[in-house]
Length: 185
Image 1 (tube, rainbow, N blue to C red):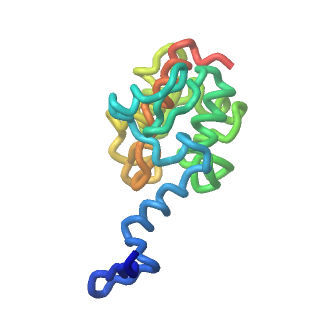
Image 2 (cartoon, rainbow, N blue to C red):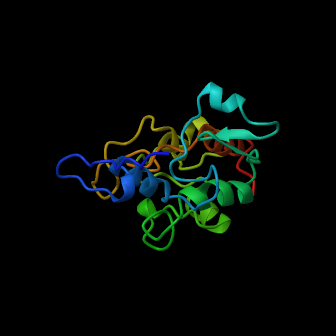
Image 3 (tube, rainbow, N blue to C red):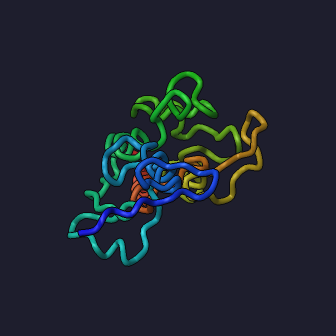
């Protein structure tokens, strides 16, 4: 065996032990989730190839196989909102939650979202039971028909906001199915 070849960084760029800056950025972005597989902020809609690779009854979530998400308030709060939307006080948790939408518990979910008007589009409820197509929360998750500005005047963004990737389809579909069922407690 020969001597290992040292990788050289591009001029002006240093990296330790051959680790590329791109890899480090990818690692840092992946750390934004809660550490459980398939439930990170970086979830995205899987390709059909990724979806087909999960053993039944699992589904693909960002290329990671997860157990199906039952469309029930407790499960939605724990596996979707609690892991992706209410991770810290800068997210939808606590008294200073954006748009006063708190998603860190089922009680807060029902108190701040169910049948409550959106601050960004007051003609729409955040969660309109039995009508996911008329629920502003679903529109935010799907990045469609958003208000131009938040109630504070900042530009409105999809949820989760960039640079995080969108939630995977399995999570968004579970939220929609729960709302379609009437958003029962």
